[in-house]
Length: 311
Image (tube, rainbow, N blue to C red; front, side, top):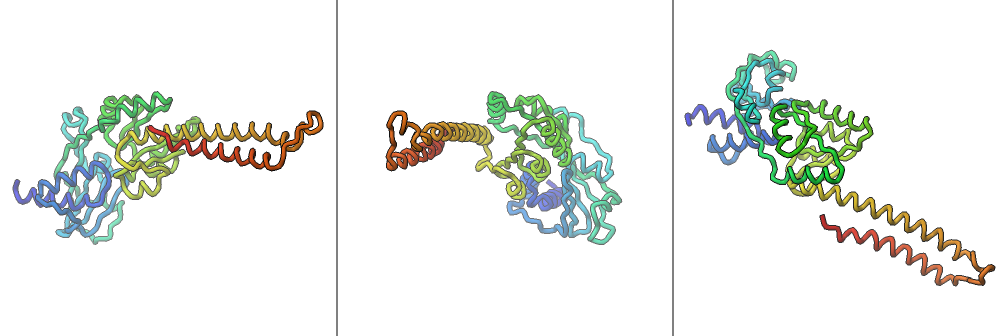
């Protein structure tokens, strides 16, 4: 590999440092391997600016500006380019690398980036490997009566192919973070209770609109901080176990409430002397206290039985 190519890949790896998007993680790992740089740092990057839902722009120490992102970034920066049709037909996500001369001072804002003379320098095709447990989890969720939707910012054709692999009928691709949030709001407006699972910063607006937000382990710190539930491992079966545990907990709560109400409806009148005159039955105070304690013990024991839950 020519030295110039290694320099380009080294710059790409530096730009993608601390970017938590799955495509960015894969691109950074490959770039570091090609550049023969195991310890990737942001050395050479003067300034970095993330454009939510589109990509990242970096001001390099050599005076150029590098932008890395998908097709939405090309549109945002008014840089016309299109990948080979075979890549899209194969269900591959395309990441573009653009460069421009930094002819202005360092403190430019996002809107001004569009005035740069951007040039496509590289297009990288990435295949998103579907988790081996994904299809099984989707099938089990449907058995529980849960409808599954796939909302993604990736290319719609890629999203469609992934949805077909895992058995999801309702899917939308090419969505911005705001559009994801709007889709969740529409589902709630239709009366649905929505749980949103994700691992990227682009999912945070949708998290705010969902009834329950679930962060998958390995995602960005911001996502985990803004979620209601964090899966301890990057195994989607834990999501299925979470729903089952939640349903078991609700059943236990209802059982405890019904038991406590029935017990008190029957026991309180007896303890108050309901049959003292008609049947000469008087319950001694010590027995009343014991019955009250027994009720509490039974409710607590019923709740503790959840410790025996196995997914």
